[in-house]
Image (cartoon, rainbow, N blue to C red):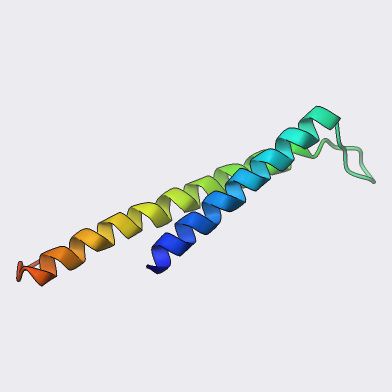
Length: 77
């Protein structure tokens, strides 16, 4: 259950960071002091958030299989 919440939460974060990064790229937003573009920071956040979402969802699916095997009395390593 917790893995599913983690996966969905980070999928939402990845989506919103992606939208923010796209808007930052389209508007040409830069940092205040150095004038660096902001969109590369958003792009790296999206990658990390998306990877974490995938890991959470994979753990959710793998966890369901593990509980099902235990319910049928199968021995797992």
